[in-house]
Image (cartoon, rainbow over all chains, first blue to last red; front, side, top):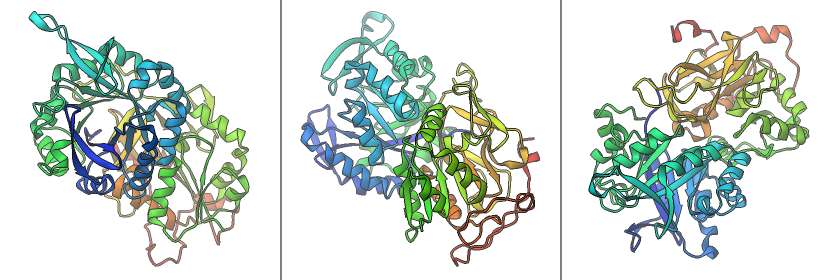
Amino acid sequence: MGLAKRIIPCLDVTNGRVVKGVNFTELRDAGDPVEISRRYDEQGADELTFLDITASSDDRDLILHIVEEVAAQVFIPLTVGGGVRQVADVRRLLNAGADKVSINTSAVQNPQLVADAAERYGAQCIVVAIDAKRVGDIGGAPPRWEVFTHGGRKATGLDVIAWARKMQSLGAGEILLTSMDSDGTRLGFDLALTRAVADAVDVPVIASGGVGNLQHLAEGVLQGRADAVLAASIFHYGEYTIQQAKAYMAQQGIEVRL
Amino acid sequence: MTDIAIVDYGMGNLRSVSKALEHVAPQASIVVTSDPDILRGAGRVVVPGQGAMPDCLRELDARGLRGAVLEAAAGKPFLGICIGLQMLFERSEEGDIPGLGILPGRVRRFAAPAKTDADGYRLKVPHMGWNQVRQTLDHPLWQGIPGDARFYFVHSYYVETADTESVAACSAYPLAFTCAVARDNIFAVQFHPEKSHEAGLTLLRNFVCWAPRSYTNGRIRNLSAQDAASDSILLNSDPTCSSFPQSTSKMASAYA
């Protein structure tokens, strides 16, 4: 008896549609966000994460309508990220029905935003998303990871472990950790990265990037010690259902909500 | 008349609570309000809450809502969620402040995160995710919810009640803690029923149908000692609300 490890389908949304990027370049249409949310809810998803990857700020309100519509039909936690720059953005998303708001680039540009948002709305609804890229493990040196921003285009020089700890101390209630090296490869999470961050912070860590099969999900928990695992394409295109993922994880001895 | 008033004191996600209630009670008039008079006139009151308890109480007072919340807790179907549970107690470790003092006990933080869980993993705080809820009291609000059903939690503090008779459910993280309390017209939970899928919606549906003995014809009245000692019964004539068992305590053996 205890807390279940969570399976979180992730929906990248642009112009009101769910898309799946392949290395941030070609985007494949994966369907209507409300419809997809309902399907994952029926399948037993533990949470849903929406990342608004809309380029233009004019279209930002679209995500609010989507969140509103989903929140009226789906009664599980919703996390929304993308384009969150100020406390007012956090408030708008929470008011639309988000339970947690994910902050990525803006946390690097203005760490005080994380502190202010957590102070105002509580650490439980502030997720800091970290895009990590492996550096300096050539020639047998221990691996290091650097924080990238702007959808992975901009290096920051920040060390991922130190950054995760700093975000926790400022009030992040959860870390959404994406390996840029693994993302889109379908070869599994960067388990060393996941484990290093999970062991370094006291808040829950969501592993993301690289899931290609159900074994990868289980590895994220068993080896990476993630509290939750996030995946997109294996669910979007009907390869696996959430039930199949949970049944597999349960077989591996992982406590899940069935 | 407002059927259900959700107390808005500027903290957290009230939309989730109102949406879930609208979903289970589409005919009911449900308002999110910071007007004490609307609270006083409402048939049922829900006190949600997120964030830090000192902020929650400060905002409650800033809006002049403390009195109306105390009145609701004294005489009408009352559902507390998360901080709405914690604030009912006498004192909180969070900010070391007094709570509303309606129930005896205090609010404590989960032990140092360096502690490990049963599998030797680092214990993460907040306690976030789906945990099992072991019902320790027969209560109308548990009707139709299987034992050990999972509900969604997100919190860093938990209640330690001084009155074990009022414990309605426990969870474990990794040690057992009280996650639901019930006394007379009050039912309060640490988890988020509005985010707990079928189990949570069932609990909310039960709340909408629940008529504790002290509540009649939508009128507020103070509890007498006799009322307080009596069991909750169902008075609602709504055919969708079938009769519920009488409450009896079975707390003692739940985590023995």
